Length: 329
Ligand code: 8YV
Image 1: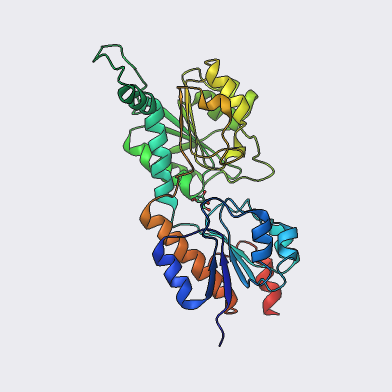
Image 2 (image 1 turned 90 degrees about the vertical axis):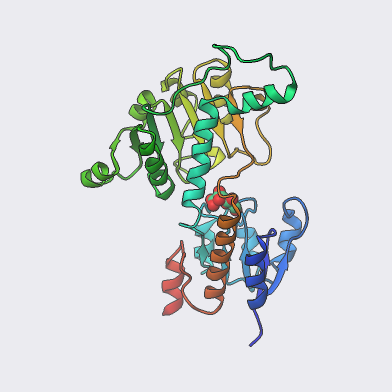
């Protein structure tokens, strides 16, 4: 049987590419930057499987340019880059890569908690500049992490992994989500539910772990930042548009909050210029899942999802299940 044609929007770790190349006729965007919209529109004309990343918008126009397409297997757990309604309307299954990146992304969010509390970026810049004049009792004092209060916005897999780390640091843990856990689950996890406003007012650290949806766009804006303590630190490893970047830059500049750690931005790879000028923000280039092991595991999972759908089997991580029910009739 002829192998199906799969288009990969970016290079993946080698094990994942090899796995796919053995089982599909693989075409890959090998250019340095993101694939252009024009090139992607052309590439999908003959593709049966598409593996996009966070950087690739997969909307109805793109789907309509892909008459042979049978699956969109996202490389990533967040799939806000894909119009799932348009996919469902066309009977196109969409999959993502949950689970395999949970701990790695929580590790990175924790890195940002620590780096922003202890001024790691500023310290590194000072040493490199050659202007460090030696140890001083009051130099570059940061904030303690242990024993403080962490507010987790979004209690999914990664939010729960953050709570596990926070327990090791003896922190009090608050969380907010559209769904509240059972009292028992809260007790076992050692955390308390709070309203969004309550969490913002009471937390020393706020870590954002919500998916990007119509409801979470600019969930943290000027009003929310005003509710936070002047000593508070905001960390975002979910999606940039969940936080209003301009409002955050103004709050950091005006001392309305103490610091921030950001791995994601509203218009990646562009970053709000006002943020780049500030010392009290740690900026990372969307590294949440960026370990060799995890990026490989994500690639293999995306590949398995893609190949399962192409073989007529229900893919393990289908996010629009209505497309599959239709298919089995
Ligand atoms: C990925 C992520 O790096 O999985 C996600 O949602 O944000 C990251 O782990 C990115 O999505 C790759 O496409």
